[in-house]
Every structure is written in structure tokens, then in C-alpha cells.
Image (tube, rainbow, N blue to C red; front, side, top):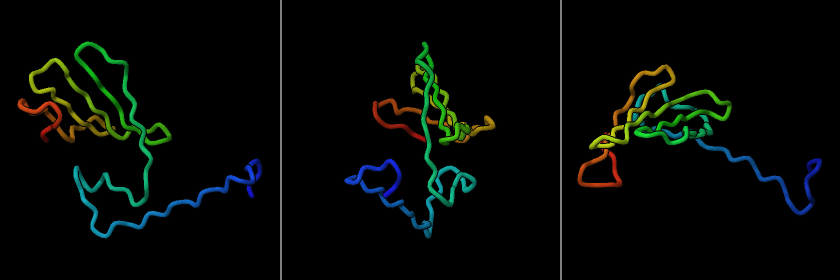
Length: 102
């Protein structure tokens, strides 16, 4: 029993994730990790015409940022890496309000 741990609450076993034999690469192989990575999505307060957010690891290191312009016909969003290089441009389909096209 761990110090400070209540007797009725055992410590959960640590999950071990097996490496994927054939990983699916969506953006590029440089963004694959050989281990699980916890990510945190944080956004600024909504401002007129923009809704930007960042994806960071649990140490606060910026991994990705998404910039958007809400007052456009297609609701365009631009995903960039930590260095500011464009990775993906997303735009909402005109006939659908819930899906994005890459």
C-alpha cells in the first residue's frame, strides 16, 4: 500500500501500449511518437472573427497551432507546427455544417 493511499483504493496498474506494427501517418512521419503522448488543447478567448487554439504536451511545449478565420464563407482553418510551418489547410464544406475537408 502506498503512503497516503486509502486501504480500499488500490493503485491502478500502469497501462502499457504495444507499438503499432503499421502506424497510420496522417500528416508526416516526423509527428509519430513511439510512446503515448498526453496533449492539451488550449484556446484563447473568442475574439471577433478568430478562434485560435494550441496543442501542447503536458510540459507546455507547443506542438501544433490552429488559426482560423470565422467570418469567411468556408470557415477556413490552418494547422501549423511549432515553427509556424503550414501543415494542413481545412475548410468547411458549403453544403455540410459538421464536416471539414482537407
